[in-house]
Length: 160
Length: 472
Image (cartoon, each protein chain N blue to C red):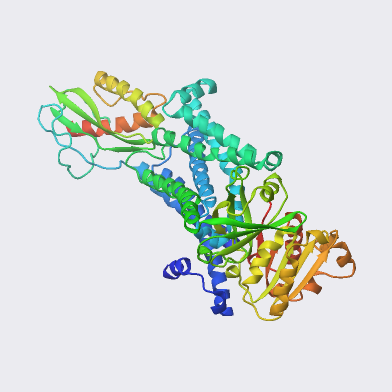
């Protein structure tokens, strides 16, 4: 290999890697999308893919989540984690969270898929018990937990 | 870009029509193409890693670091294996650009790094997962083997171990070529058994990602090149040209010329100095493929190869080949040719059976009187093959030709016989214009190394030195 070819290869590779890293850092920096769904009435499950409204979910993290919730189905922001996207939707009935679902639960690899399939039911149970996003992370599934609870909080904010 | 494409697709100019400027230009283009291929190979690995990075990578602790390292090692390792496949696929573009032997040299260089990366992939991921799960390594390995498609992924790693270990120089010397080759074919199985876990476990083929498209394209390209250029193309060419043995001629106590007959052999596109991999279909010889240079440029009906009987395989040829024995082939390969030349002056160094490509190269070399100097070396007069033909070619065209017979000398003239070195012959005295010559070297490795070293010392750049390697 000539020096010119090798140097060209090294610099081209470095450039490609830096671009990849930058894109990745940007993707993790904030939620991938801010798609949200307004209340759609009391019927569970109807229209969780409703028309997106613009704007992010705004403030309100940590807001109390008990009886002040509006009834309906609310879909939180889609959150990018290193292992895939997570998006949580909640069904509120009589002011209480009656169901939690994950319309988007991506896993880039087989292991993440297995971890998600263990962690998500646990998270759901805790959320239904606590009736808020203030639940503990599942150990061994930190990123999925963080993404899940972030998306959940944005759904709760919409229901508030 | 358009000049690039035309350089690749344009038919080789006939040397008679190529003026000096055209020759130098073609030479520069070829070198530029080689650099471009190098950049593409590097970038293919970088792109694989960059696509993984675009997800964002968790680097929160030691477990994450180990896992990310394991994934990157797997990505780069897989990419290197695919680059190795392409290098071994006899892709015409690569052969015309860097030559088959150079491609195989790079293939061999990549073997160990690829293997270490694949091992690191397995080890780092196991450690990283064990760290995250707070499990011990045995338990983590057990759980990994239990996952979908993982048993054959471990098998794949085992096959890679077998392939690489048998290709280590020390081990390979002890193995018969056929045994080594059979084990080496397991690399196809290794690549294929590694695939499923990349789909189901890996980040590589995660659904709905550009990565998936990229990797499928890489695999199709590499495996497609192998199927096309190692299987389909040779089969089609062999059927089209219907080559058979015409007669076997003994030219020395341990060397034979095999005269071949076939259809439209001038349309094989073979240039003087190139070689084919031949297979002779008799009961004793069919399983052995022989990489042999043409010793004269084919006519429309005939071709000739010259063989030194060095091993069992080549010794069996003389006894087995008959008039009419069918022959199949892969080729032509190599850039030990006039087309690869960048300068007007030519210096040819040939030793032993290395004279065969040199003889065919000289036959079609387009050079004026006094522009070519040839030196042929042999350890004794009986292993001086085809010398009379080379001498006649050189005399007819006004070129210089010498022989150097006898035991090799030492020091900077070790490429000559001791007697010639003693009477003061040197590279400077025999080739006064060497630093302005295109240098062609063909012979046993240790001798060719000595010539190349001395040529470098005399100021010839690597880009103007062409070697045809016989010994694998």
